Length: 358
Image 1: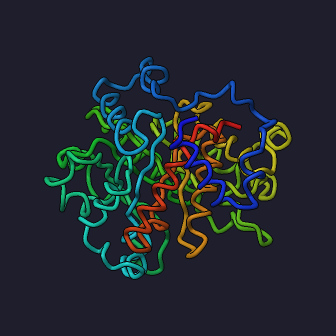
Image 2: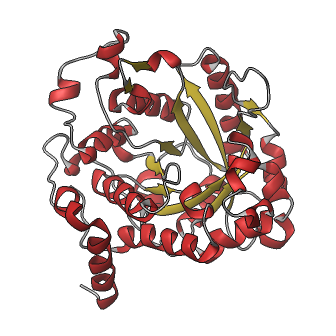
C-alpha cells in the first residue's frame, strides 16, 4: 500500500471513529460484487463501448472521468450548486455569501479537485468563457423554482440542451420527481431532452428523486426507501441516463408499507438487508448491475457532523459498488478552505485502496 494511501486510510478511520468497523468491516451477503460492473480506469471501453452512445458522448464521458483528483480511477466527485433555485438563494448562500458570485462556485469545484461542476444555465453561462475549458461543465436543465404559491414541487425546463452545448458543457442533468402528479410529463420531457443531448455528444445525469406526501406514513419517510428509490433508478436508466443521482437509502419496504406496486419477498430478504451498504447495493443493482453509475447525494449541511457524514456516505457508496458522490451544501455552506477539505476527504475514500467493495 502506498504511503499516501496509508495516510488517507488513517485519516478516514479517524473520521469514522467508533463507526469504522460497522462500515469498513461489513461483508455483503445479498447480491455478490462479482455480478456488478464496477468503476475502473477502463470504464468507457469495458462498459460503454458496445452501447448506442455516440463517439462524441463517449469522448465527453471520458473527459469527466479524466478530471480532478479522481482522474483515471473510474470514480467521480461532482460539486452541484443549483440550490439557489431549488432552496432559494438567500437560504442557500446565507452561511457563506461568497457563493452568490458564480465564479467562486466554480473556484470551489476546481480547488476542491472535483471531476465536474453541475449548476444552472445562469451560473455556468456567466463564467463559461473563462472556465468551461478548465473544468467539465454539467448544466442542470430543469428546476423547481420554489416561488409559485402554493408550491407544487414541479420540475420545469429553464433552457435548452442546445444552449448548454453552446456554452461548452459536456453533460446535462435533470430531475424527475417520481411519484408526483407531474412525473409522467417530466418523464417524457426529459427522455426527449436526453435523446437530443446524446445526439449532441453530451452525457446525461438524472436526479432520480421521489416526491409525494403519501410516501410519509406513520412517522416513516419512504422517500429514501431502497425499494422505491431502486425502482426510480430503474426508470432513470430506461430513458438512457448515463449516471443516476440518488439519495442514500435509509430504510426499506416502501411498497409494502404504502400498499402499492408489485413486490416479491426476496426483494427484502435476499436482494437487500437493513445494513446501509446492502440498501445502497440494491440501488446499484437497479442501475443495470452498475453498468450505469450510481452517485449518491451528500445531503443537507448539518454543521459539525458534515465531515463524518460525507465520508460515511462515500464509504457506503463505494463499498456498495457506486461510482461516486455529488456533494454540494456540505461543501459550500462553510468557508472555502473547509469546503475544499471536505471534498478532498470524500475523494480520499475513493482513492484509498484499503476501502474495498463489500
